[in-house]
Image (cartoon, rainbow, N blue to C red; front, side):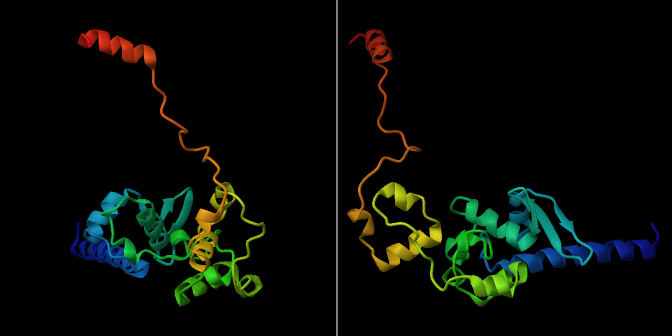
Length: 192
């Protein structure tokens, strides 16, 4: 490799690392590990567009690296980052489909990202506050709401859940199943 090729190769690597580090900074999230270790844990290939901006595939979408990292950090268990630094609007997805009102876009960055992605006309058409379209009667009604709607309702009425009729969550096991035959066989084997 000639000296000129070595310099070009080094410059490209440094440029890519700088772009990736800038993407980490733009997330605003405090990760517990170094950027390199976090990127390794992220485990997705980073690609660069023609403008030199890093992108990665996450949730079957090619996203700017900062958005992919933000979604990934929000989806991870404790320990990946300081969860207090995760964006709160739209479950960590500013400008995402969960935005139902201007109230969901809390920061200037969230509003700017939304306007950049969807346009000023769409932003201006958003209602000021999230509207609940049907009356809450049961816990199932509450579970069907978006996170932003649930947050607003609980902020306005902290004891709302105690006032709703209980309905079982179909995703939860209703009760423990005891296999009596297996239990009796275990007792016989243990000599009881």
